[in-house]
Image 1 (tube, one colour):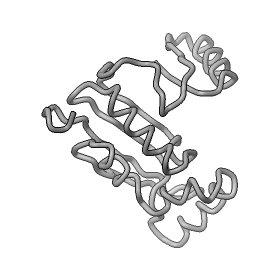
Image 2 (cartoon, one colour):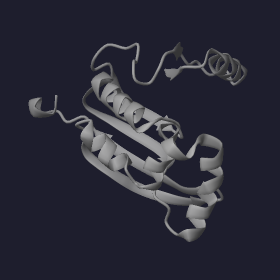
Image 3 (cartoon, one colour):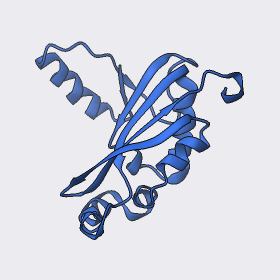
Length: 151
């Protein structure tokens, strides 16, 4: 299952999935208002998405992802993270010029761990980083805790 707010992107994805003979359900919706019931998913994966959002929309999205995950469900995110050095910081300036300095600043500041903790996720961690021509790509993991206190 995949979701996007842009109907044109969904049409492209649908064509690509068909061409690859892959069955995927594509849904139209916004990340902060997911069209799914509470506790529906075991895992949610996000790739290079959060840096497009304002801090407020990042928070709304993280809370919404928490809502649709089952207790014990996992969140896996690949997105831009805190630069691991001056060269990685310089590389990320190109991304910021294209995607906006304001919304990408949270990523550069390394605030995604804080974001997911603030949405009540447990076991939040930046698990790995990769140096790329456009900056530091980071992998994050988090879990919706099983205990009632995290619900």
